[in-house]
Length: 72
Image: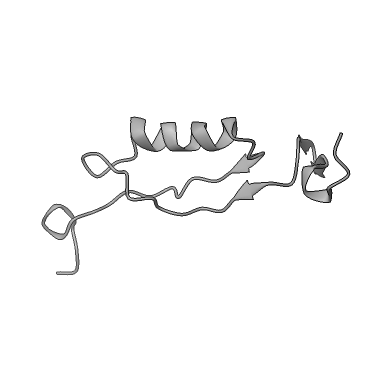
């Protein structure tokens, strides 16, 4: 096992992460029909396969003005 602190396991309460690599929540502009779908899922799967121990999703979708309730 590497001695690099970033590659050491990390205990986060009841969750043990395999390393300390993480990505923060952000929007890579992959919505389909205004919602996160297969391409967005594949984006996070690829990061996990690449070794990121914790990845966060943005938790939002694009909303276009004509489709939103907007201010009245």
